[in-house]
View 1 (tube, rainbow, N blue to C red):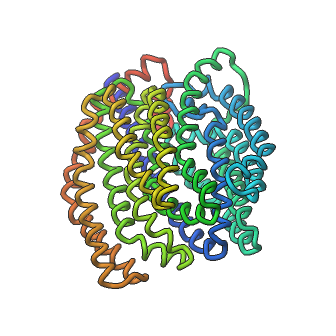
View 2 (cartoon, one colour; view 1 turned 90 degrees about the horizontal axis):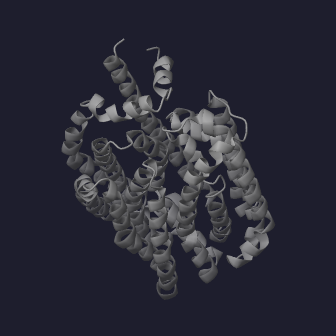
View 3 (cartoon, rainbow, N blue to C red; view 1 turned 180 degrees about the vertical axis):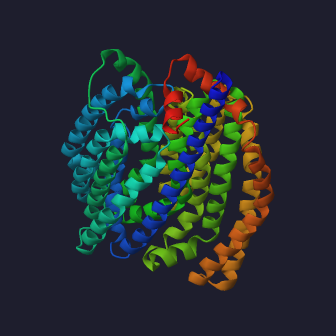
Length: 513
């Protein structure tokens, strides 16, 4: 087989891995999200907003600690320009040590942390969630290997296997009156089961070991990313902490439900973006033309999904909350109308964050996260003191549109000078058609009532309008997909070949080529 034929085969195979990974990741997240919505709609009719708020307090601590639990080292394995045989044993050892130390500290500090965040009742859920922090370190390497090889089908399997037992435990404990503890124990159970399934799904297993020559390079890459993750989770949970201290766990429960629903589009897309975009951008390396093309397509796809979901959520917030969660939670509807805008914009910022990390610019992500938290914390604190919960929602939207998105564009333009125009071109039509669909949905819902009929009729009308308007854009995008495969991925093959990577040969062998 000639060199040119080998090159073409390997490049086409790599692209199929990317597309397959994106497809399975999207299916995985969508199915899990639909199932979790059904479970949550049942559970919140059993528990009180205060129970939900107490769990939210515990979740704040868990999110912040777990963000640095494995020191960002999983990304060293997910990067396709690093060989797992060299780094995986050291990553496994460092992840175990760091997650154990942090979990132990979290368990011992549970009481003062709970009191500081406004509810001593959160201490026990915090201790339970410390187990989850340690499990995150245990399963760092298997999860990262699946991400690296775009095996999101195995991640779907792990989530599916864990879904029934973890949610059965959640419902049983909730009906027994355990409230916040039900959420905590179900999360630990789900993580344990899914982690075991992922560990059984990888072909190569690495035991913890220490290669002193790899420690510094691994930490040099992982620690800045861990810092960025820490800042990210602090800023994403800062509003919870402020609301809990200022207004109490009951109000926090209302706010958390609104934020959870507003994040539907973000959560559906973020798992796909995080598990596919970063290794795909990393594979492009210094191929500017390839990165531009990938950013254009990815931004169009993200905007085409996130914007209509956000617009429809704004339009149908009241019937959505009333039908799914009951009248006890209708105070979350006005918050949802505002936070849905944040959820849509966040998806684009996450895409640019993955582009920066995938191209080795994690320090830029830290800088953006720092700007974000420095702006958000005082904005939320001031807004809550003036306007209560709705003030926190408006603060989120203002900061991400006026500060965060421009900051990401600034750093991405250093790599891709045309980044701003690419994002504008990719997002303008999905935005316009999403607004039109949202207006249509609100109008139809108002005509048919605020109950389930209004929700279904508004969703159907808005979805139909958006599909019709977006069809020409989709038709223009699809013909581009098969063309120029070899040219767009040539740089990736050359990088793998020049660095002596065996990945190309491995890919060919697995597919019998």
